[in-house]
Length: 122
Image (tube, rainbow, N blue to C red; front, side):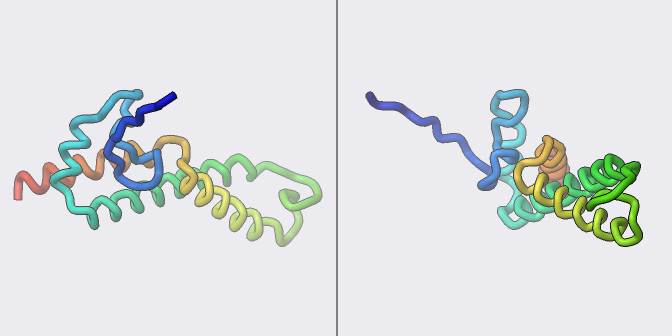
């Protein structure tokens, strides 16, 4: 049995930055914009979008663990505040790099579309 694959353009190795990420349908506006923006600018926009999502997730995780009391790694002992902030920072970076919750792809699309508008007006 032979299966066929559909070759769709990809922005990067991450599926969060695929061209067909708008409600499961191809995003022709983004595909068109990507042809006008250099690969270096695309990579920079992707990193910026992922970093933004990591920052957002870090804020969410910090709020989620701020009220925990008691013993253990999330307890309310003198050294856990610093340790907890480092842990939530690493969690947020890991989540964002693994695909995140969908914020990075929208930020990336917005950045690319804005760069295309800047190219047109310059």
